Image (cartoon, rainbow, N blue to C red):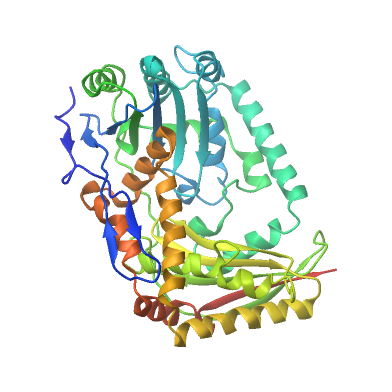
Length: 446
């Protein structure tokens, strides 16, 4: 049986704080939701959070594995495994997992990233046992046949080809990542390369599954309308007999922050218009700098009122007709990316000049209280939006556990973002968003 559940200190996750425009004092309110976290004997982390507002329950299972754990010549395994997890298990035929959820009137999805693979579903509350049985069966006894493997690999190769055709700037984006990240683990594409995927074998997949898709490398989160005692019993029944795997400790290079200016060009035969990639290496997601960096992201690029959007996409003086970007996190590393599509190479230069001009303004002039409060309100709304449904909450809690490993500090997280000051912003902009820390890749058309 699992250890006794331990509610979080304070028993609450943040939540709402009121921000008065033009005022730096945050009057905090803290509607809480219950949260219990325990670990099974086989190492599976379990998170329970009850919410009786709707007759629904969500279950998320996150595995601490993504493309950063792949080795050279074997890329694409994490993305391929996301699909193969629906290929059937000891008691569930291929793709029957999907049929079970659909017949129960539920919704499901899955996602693989550089550092996590996630499976989640929402069903009527009386179907919780069904979902736990399905998830436990494939964690314990996924059946990987040659036929299912060949089908998934061919689908993966089709996906790679379609994405390449659909995104004319994909190749330049991959080259940009190789400039931003210094080592293979972080710089190769999530989907892998066609050559690598084509050469993967069933043994490669089985080894990847047995190494990473084990209870001691996973977190299970249940949120919504359920009885905590009954759910704890069901989790123990379905998951506790699954053997633990070997301790996983991939050899990833430590993140050593170094400033180095890079300026390169890339000829793109598929692109119909010139473009540019601009990036900055920034502080680790686990550092205190990251609270400030997250607010800076809203100042620069989030929404129509953001500084760079107004500067580059202004209706009266539009110098970019496509602009995107933001913080990219991969395990202990983070970078800030900006991508723009323009009409002429000269306009790409104008965009870069305008971006650095706007950054220089932020380095020397404080934001007004009203402007800073507006960006914080936008951040808060998006942050709290991650609790808008039981599924969103389950995903957030899985991601939070795999990021911080300790929920004790989670009730303070929102405050730390909202307490960012104008001085903090000036300091961080001067630290990271500098010319000598910039990586630029200009995309030229043929």
